[in-house]
Image 1 (cartoon, helix red, strand yellow):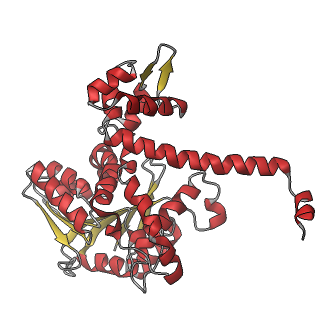
Image 2 (cartoon, rainbow, N blue to C red):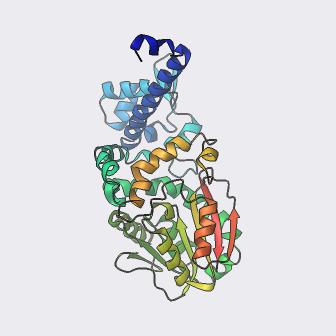
Image 3 (spheres, one colour):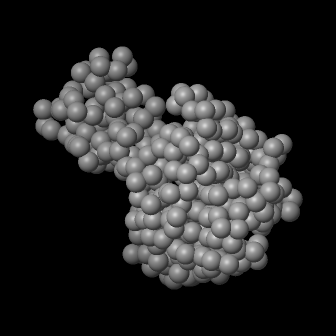
Length: 361
C-alpha cells in the first residue's frame, strides 16, 4: 500500500488522541523522576507544614541551589502536585503531604519512587531477557531496590496488620499471645515481622528470604527495634523446616515473584501445623486478561511485571513466570489445594491493590 493510500485510512482524531496519549505517558515517566528527586532530596518533607514558600526560602531550608529548586517547584506546580500562588510561592497541601511527605501516613506513596533510577537502568538488560527468556534476579536493582520495596509496604504493615488484619483471622491473635511460632516467607526487609514481634513478645518469629539486600535491611531493622524474639534466615541456605512446627505463616506480595511457587507452597504446607493458618497477601487480579482490562491500573501492573515481578519469576531457566497479575484467586485456590490445603477464605481489608486469603490444611 502506498503512503498516499495509507494516509486516507488514517483517522485524524484517533491520530491526535494517540499522540496525546503517548506524550502523556512520557510526561508521567519524567514527572516520576522529579518525584524521586523531591523525595530523595527531602524537598517534600521540607515543604510539609511550611506554608507557602518561595524558591529562595526552600533552597535555604534544604541547603540546595535556588535555581534548581525553582525549576523543580515550577514543574511540580505544573503537574498539580504542588499549589502555587501568584506571589511566587509554592505549598504542599495536607492531602499531598500524606502521599509524598509523611512516611507515617497510611497513604504514603513516595516510597515506590525510591529506586526509580535503578528500575529504569534495568531497561538496558531487558532486551537480552526478551531474546533468551531468562529474567533478572530479585536483587538486580541493588540495595535501593530492597529499600524501595520496604518503603512501599511499610505504611500498610504499620497501620493495618496488627489492628485490622490479625484480629480478622480465626484464632490467630490468641495463639500469638500464647506464644505461637511464626514464619514470614519472602519477608523482605522484615517490617511485618518487626511489627508483629513487638506486639506479641511471647511469640517466636522467623523471616525467610533469598534477597541479600533485603536481609541486610531486615537485620538492621531488627537491631534498631531491639527485638530478641525474631530471627532472619537466608532461604537458600537455611530454608523453611518441613517439621509442621509453625502455628502461623505469612507471605506478603511474593508468591507471584517466585521462580518455583508450587514448591514454596508445598514447603509452607510441610512447615505448618495441622491446625495452623497461612495468610497470603498478593496482587488483586482477575483470571482473564479481558477482565483485568477493566482496571485502569492494569497497564502499570504489566509494566511492573516486565521490569520486576515476571523477570524475577523467570530468573531461572525453569521459572514459572507468574508475574504481577498471575496469582489471582483462581490460581491461588488451585495451587493451595494441590499442595494439600483444604480451607480457603478470602478477606477484604479495603486495599485497592491486594487480595488476602486465609488458608488452612
